[in-house]
Length: 302
Image (cartoon, rainbow, N blue to C red; front, side):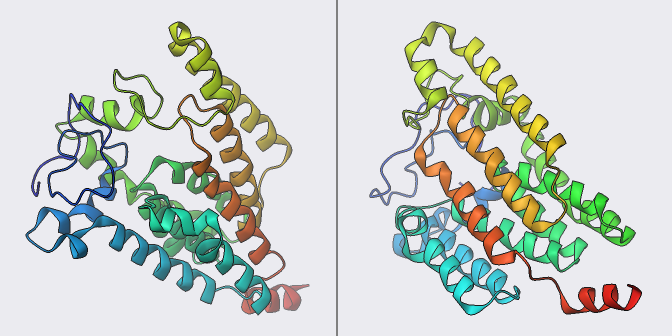
């Protein structure tokens, strides 16, 4: 409902079928998202027709508009742009979540636009777009934080200042979610996706993490902790060996890290592989194409 927190202290359901158009269908369910995701459901809390207020309509609209804006800002040749569009719109990796209520699509679209702006050395705008993605879902956070390494590495000190400034816009969003609902926030956003609540997440693809916690349910907490440590260790070692140096590197490394996270997560589904898939495709789009003014400046100083 309007004016109320989306985070319940004691949720009882995981939500219901998207074929149900009731305005109060998920009033007792978990909300495993950052506070910004609630914006997509505001129309449903009003008296508009279900066909208009359905959050899936706004999710798809924002995802498509953001993606095509990102695509228009790249210098990639047409064939690469067409290939990226196929993955985002036509092939199952994008089309399936698009028609079934894909809340991941606007997140990944905002990330892709942020990476384009980072490549164009528009640090503040890139940081703000990354902050918007982070305000929707935790899955955007690894990518946004990886981009901090790039802004710090680049020789232009303005990028090192402007990107973190833009990214800091996510802080008030997080504080808004925590304010007065700290326990409920952690229950919904942290514990539920990790499978540590009484009501289990419906995410249950037979990947390694899910297999282990299913085979040894009495060791769920210990296995979850060990998997988290293992995943973090793998990513940190890879980061030391292959630190990303530009937007392309961020896309590729983030794709790798999210593959590791998807395989090791105790509550996971194959659908989460949309992130590494589209990030790998996006690295292909961005590879070898920098802004003309940057190339000209380097040529002049070289």
